[in-house]
Length: 332
Image (cartoon, rainbow, N blue to C red):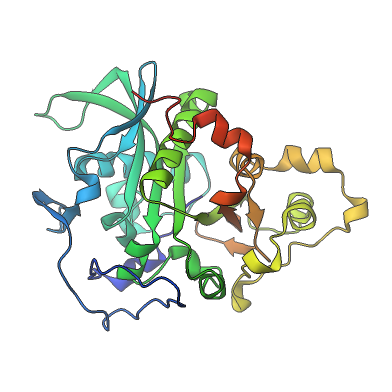
């Protein structure tokens, strides 16, 4: 799942640490009309723009899992976040077909305003040390990343990015007692695109879900290409076999809605459709993911996006048992 740059134009956004009230429908407060109160800050840890890094990204962020030389944890500094942005640029813009704007080309980093308040999950390889700047010590190489946005943080900063493509509010209104989290910007360096790296990333996500009492995960998953007719087989397969039930269903925004039901179910070649799906989407489906109603064409990133919905209560028990109900399987 990935996020986009379109919200850069919103500029810096203020927030509060007030907890949303449970038991009633919660709507995102428009930017500029939100009360600002104290947040949990770590003194002295600032971004290049002067924005202070939240406590979740402090230097004390614990290791969430380890397999051999690989470690998964949250980013501990803005320098680590910048390296994750460079990794995202390499994957999205150099390997894939994303179209960079002038700022992205100049910095060679995939970044937007959401990076200022999301948590960044990292996989690091301690067997490979690299210099992060000319004068600094060598640090473990960052080889994979995911971006995590908790609902309480999203509500402080104008909402989930997914709301740019899908109408999220009806789902939030139907599930006012649940705590949602958005997944995005998933990418891994090519030599590390293997079971071990993905296992660590998902171990880190599971540990994060437990720590923050997350009830459901959402986010956009992409199929490469912008012609839905060329993607008719996988899109139709997702629609016919994994469409979320009404209580969980989210519809693509009207002006961006792209029909996924392009081939009748009885004409589908299921094996060919599975083969056409990206590995990440197949991984989500194995976990128990459901799909929203309609897809969205993202011309900037050269993809067609489907919405992934994963209630924690509906996760495949094999996944939960494998990583442990307390996320202890790969605990350091």
